[in-house]
Length: 333
View 1 (cartoon, rainbow, N blue to C red):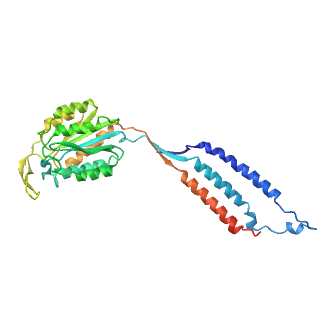
View 2 (cartoon, rainbow, N blue to C red):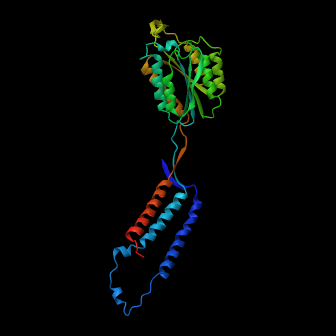
View 3 (cartoon, helix red, strand yellow):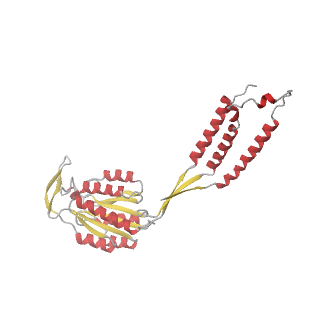
């Protein structure tokens, strides 16, 4: 990490010529302003000791010159610049395409597949502070819950808001993938990524998932697919009571892994199978590492305004001079 100071308005330093001019003016002022006293013998004045107050009198003018110098430095607008060459997360746009169909409420994850997916995804977001991340949700249809943003607090709040029942039930994988591609197609990012998470088989929507994958490939978008669900059977909702409570029964877990692998292979991505909470955490960690390795060396710089300390020093010196002049060195006409 390197830090240096530079000035964005160095022309203001030309005003430093004021300081020697002030010194010349001060010298002539005090030379011409000294009083002449006619006395028969001045030896008495030579042996009279000068007090500390008298010796420091000219310090008032020095304070004023220092204040002017500090003010001119502030006007020159100093900035500090920090730079690094080891940032690997900058320049990546990511869309999380998340299935919110009824089967995502299954209990093979704690407390459910959907809640586990939300929790792990939010941790993933926290680990990528410099990336733009968006959120697409899909069930029987798909829509953008949050466009690409670096405001991750807003993104996580919108993530918390997603729930089963907010859109028509079903699993439209093609629609979800196509909507995510649409959010990334105009992106100028170095790397464009979709993380598509689902627990079922494509059974809704008018867009074929394979076609959506080809479109993603066309735009240079890499798709990581995650199949969520245990091996065998899981406690899965099959009906909703009038009071909104879900009724559960054990059902066979069916995930179209062939399709998810095809989507990943077409876009140069990777397919993962998450069978429990811990496995899902590991998958997101692996994706995090894979994407960081794509652009391992990135230079970045951050500029910080540094004029305030100089402005405060100038103000303090001016105030010190005024207080000293009108209180300590106050003269009576």
